[in-house]
Length: 388
Ligand SMILES: *Cc1c(COP(=O)(O)O)cnc(C)c1O
Figure 1 (cartoon, helix red, strand yellow):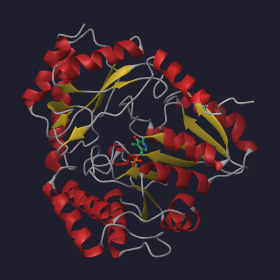
Figure 2: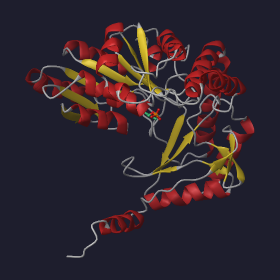
Figure 3: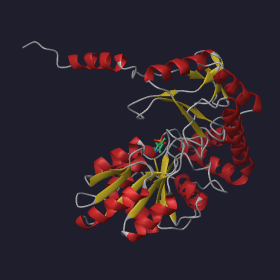
Figure 4: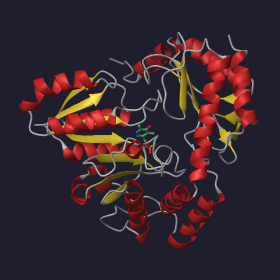
C-alpha cells in the first residue's frame, strides 16, 4: 500500500473551509493600544483583552526591560530547580494581596494554571461539574484529571443541584468549575449560589477570573470581590495576559492549596519558570491596578456609553446578556459573522467574528478598553448602523 498517512489533513482542511470555520492569523504591528496597525492600516481595536490599556504602558515596558538587564531573558529551568527568582515570589505575594488570599502561585499561562490546578485536586474517584460554556482550559483540565465530568446547562444552578443530589454520593471529592466572566459571552457566573451549592454538597469550587481580574470589583480583584465573596473557600484562577498586559497565569487560594500545587501540579513542576520580563511586567501592572482605580472607572464608563448607544441606535442587534466589557451580538451563520467582521475591518474597526466550534452560535465580539475615546466608541456604533 502506498497511501499517504497524512492525506486526511488536507481533506480535513477542505471540510473546515467549506463550513466557514477556517481560521488564520492576522498580523498586527506597533504597540498594542486603543488603535492598532492591522495589515499596515490603523484600525480601532475592539478585539483585544487589554482592558486597561496596560500592554503598551511605559511603566510595564520599563519594568520588563530592567528585569531583562538584571536577570536575563530566560529563567533557565523549572521553579523547583534553577528557575526560581525573588521576582516570582514578589509577584505571587502581590497577587495574593490583590485577591485577599493567603497565597498564590504563578504559572507560565492561564491555560496551564487551569490544567495544573484541576488535574491536581481531583482524580479517578472524583466528580467534576462543569458549566457548559466554560473555557477550553477548564474543559481540558477536567479531561486531564481523569475525574468523571458532568456538564451543567450554562449558569443553571437548579440543574446543578439536581446533578449534585443524584451523583455526589457516588464519588470521593467533587469540584465545581466555572468561568467567572464567560469569555465569549460576557455574562457572569452566579457565584453566591455556586458557593451555597458547594457548601451544601461538600464540593470544592474553582472560578476562573481571567476576564475579571483588574476589571471587576472595587479594587479590581474580580467577580469574587464584586459578589462580596472575598475570603470564601475558593480556588481562584486567573491570567496575567489580559488586563495585566503581560503573559502568565496564577492560582490564588489557601496556603495549603498553594503548597500542595507546588508539590503536585505537573504544569508547574515540569515546565520552565515565567520569564523575568513577563514577571516584572505583571508585577508593575498589579501596582497600576491598585494605584489607579480611575482606569477601571473609565473602562466601565466606556462600557455603559457603548451599551446605551447600541440600545438606542441599534435595537435590532441581538446583543447577548453581558455584565462585563465583553459585548457580543449574534449572527445567523458563520458566513454572516465573517462578512460583518470584514465590513467592520474595511471601515476601520477591528472586532473579530467568533464561530463554532469555539461557541455554539456565531457572533461578533467587541471588547471595550479604558483607553477608548468617546469618538472611537461613536465610530463603532456608526459603522454598525451601516451594516445590514
Ligand atoms: C484567556 C483565558 C484563559 C487562558 O489564559 P492565558 O493566560 O491566555 O493562557 C483561561 N481561562 C479563561 C476563561 C480565559 O478567557
